[in-house]
Length: 249
Image 1 (tube, rainbow, N blue to C red):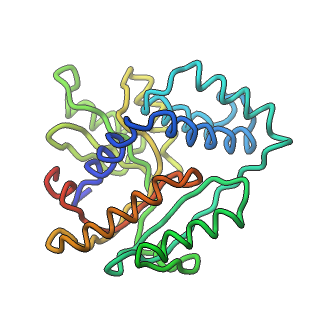
Image 2 (cartoon, helix red, strand yellow):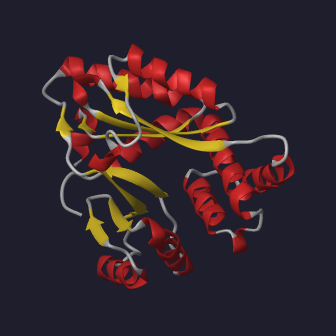
């Protein structure tokens, strides 16, 4: 995939997550609850649950925690009603923002997300106002190592159905269509590979360079921090190129 790498942004998010591991596990637990509700508690018969488990493992969530979350979700399905909602809007400097949440209270969460947009100098928009600027793709990130042959990994990924393969200095990025993500991930897992990241996300078709404006960078980063601090927010996607991302490219 040509253009700016998204791994730097994901890596930055993961480094921050190391300081709030319990919070990340809680968010993944909610994703497990959604997956169990939709397809049952048996990963063998629930591809979405398998995908969430892979994401949990990539975030170093212990197997005991994963099993406990699945059992808890299976037992709570009648009492806790989580739903996935996506909000869209504009951040400082007209940047495009997509916020994905899992919530048990739609009204509370909508109010909180709108408040963060407003407080950060942005505005929440209607569904579809910015999502057309993004492509939904699966991204599997594998750490470079002497034991992994680049050409062999690329052929295995493409043979399994991957759309694109990107070799960076420290990682390999494997992009898939959302519908092919599970198949490609499971094929690579069967080869004994482990992942630094494995999930479906939204990737901007074009980016807005914010690196020349320190004030704008500060405003965008503050907005992202506010979203990250909200317990209902699972993921935030944007089309701004920030300094730390540029340095890693």
